[in-house]
Length: 173
Picture 1 (cartoon, helix red, strand yellow):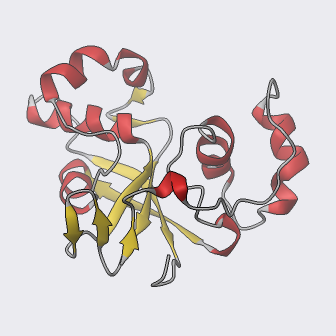
Picture 2 (tube, one colour):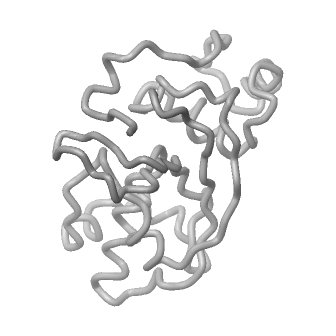
């Protein structure tokens, strides 16, 4: 069972990357892709580069994970992927206040896929042991919230969306 109660208290397992402050992603990727050879470029850009200072998942070692691109409907995403960080879901607020997130919405899907972690044994969260949670959002919580708002308000989002599922965590993560 993956313990997500205090992830920021766990030691980071990311490789010691060259600093990315004031560095464009293409420059950063050129310098650092050798340290994470199995990580897809879109994952590196969104999770390791752009949101590195904000992620709750630095305790995961990206070098040992497998990444699988999948396509799910909006309803499947909301039903099968748990949002642990970035709650509560509020369709009215989310639809009205996530304008920057909405800019990435084109052709009824996202410009970047949501990144989720497979959790085959469930998670331990501040809400208790959630044994039925099989996937948790790692990166893309605002996209998840906006998708929820669109679907709940009947404004779209029901079609197919690409997402990337990370697999390979051990039982003692």
